[in-house]
Length: 214
Image 1: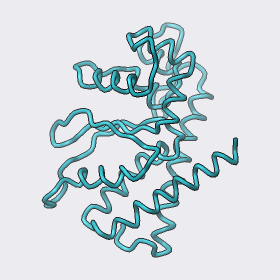
Image 2: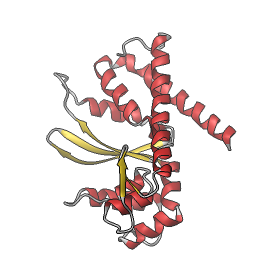
Image 3: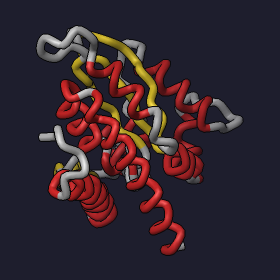
Image 4: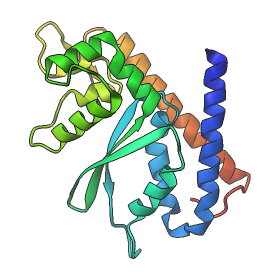
């Protein structure tokens, strides 16, 4: 299992290197994309199943939206999908997700039971559940179950929506309820994965493999 994980990580880094090497052709968008890769680093590695971001669609005096260019680059990362949700005040809300990781998270017996209880379809499929979440994100009230998609423990989602037996104990990345050990370990794994991706990008820069970044 560990060997497979190492192989998958090497493959991800190879794909990332390919994306970064293409940046020389679009120097105006380098910092924008590098910042985005940093923010979704844990999802790129599949440690965090998804990330929900509000991304500026206009930056500086560039004629075309940097986000349009980033969409093309991110299309080269085979394990990552993204869904554009809504645009407001020159920012677009985007859900990025690692297909295998999110599928595993949603298939968890407890998570699946909870999602079905609040109206998600009985026959499960990753695409159907992502569609359902996107539809709810486009509606008025913010769907609290998005925390499950983002990799938060179910107990923290239940605590946030007011489960009487769960007490708020701390905030670290998100509001943590009940026993904090699971939540803290999960949060630390997200940070470590994001740091690993950032370190990989920085190492390529220090080696001069791509020239226009930072």
